[in-house]
Picture 1 (cartoon, rainbow, N blue to C red):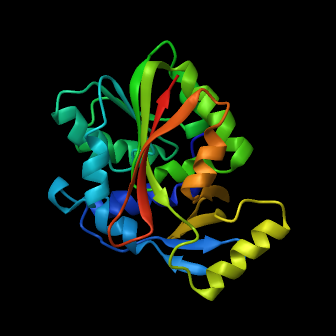
Picture 2: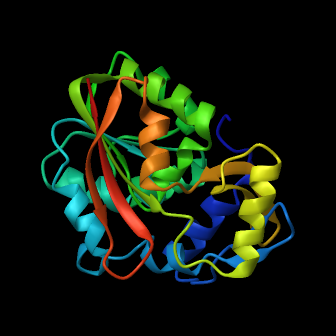
Length: 247
């Protein structure tokens, strides 16, 4: 998916208004009609390092060299790593989110979707950061494998992907379990969500977001040139951090 058109940039307008002092979160609409509010993200988009989840702080210790921050949003991870001395490129399919990250100090922010990351060649990265649950941008089994192969083209030998996501089988209510069963009946992965974001008059296109367990992640990376080398579950939530290393 290419970067968003102006009327589709619900996420970008959320961040822009938050930066200007409006804390109203976006609405999340799932393809089965379930409606939620982006409370988790809205608490973190502009949060200082001290308030970040512990698994994110732990995951950042694996970052080395030149960094690609995928789904940079308001730039909190990218700007932090830039301040630590890394050369960082942040990408997001939301042009307005990229503008927010630039205004906050990100030197190299680009309006690119995750599937367009390979167009960054000949730049070569040592770390790809997918925090803030952005490992879920793998999207699905085949989609995720194709994306990992693209990542291999823009990374150096021994490069790392450092990301966080959610185990879909942990701490679920009946409504979400029913959605998983629906997914399996339709030949999709249990934690493969299809949703869009709404904010004021802006609505994103529908897109896939993949929550997956550790065994599913290990299955997904098989044969892609990447392998799971570190796994850190959160102490009090179904979230976890994972580190993939390039062969």
